[in-house]
Length: 213
Image 1 (tube, rainbow, N blue to C red):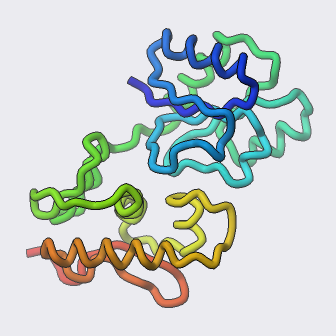
Image 2 (spheres, rainbow, N blue to C red):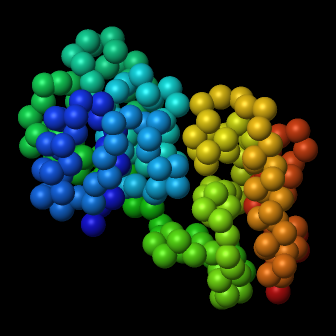
């Protein structure tokens, strides 16, 4: 079943879309605004009813369809940052067709992030080290998913704050550092020493300290 997040400010429209999309086989979570979307959610598609929320609402590895006004300039600006745009008023059947078209264009997200000794099972929300599950918090899980999605990449602190914690800009919080430290300790205790790497002055990446045997 396709997991769909809906952020729609108009209550009547939100209720209608939630009912109709569920009847068409989508697993829907609906909220009045992007601020209320669950940060740890991993939807297959996001419907965003307020185009201005594109400035800070990005769900990693998830296509975004904006439901906005008919102003051509606003539509062009939105399409620079989203995957599709449908102007109001719209026909519901066209919305469903566009959702399915976007899902066909976007490659399906792998349920397993397999790094050899470290495996993240997205469907079951489990982190496995050498086949054994380790306990992680919700944010530690979201952090390891982000790092494991591209283990050779250094993710900046600002990037992680935006995509894992949903912060729109630079923040004085040290939550990235504290969560990365706890995740590093848990992986090390399970036998993966040095897998959470702090790249000084830039951010974090995930890689083995030594070649796997």
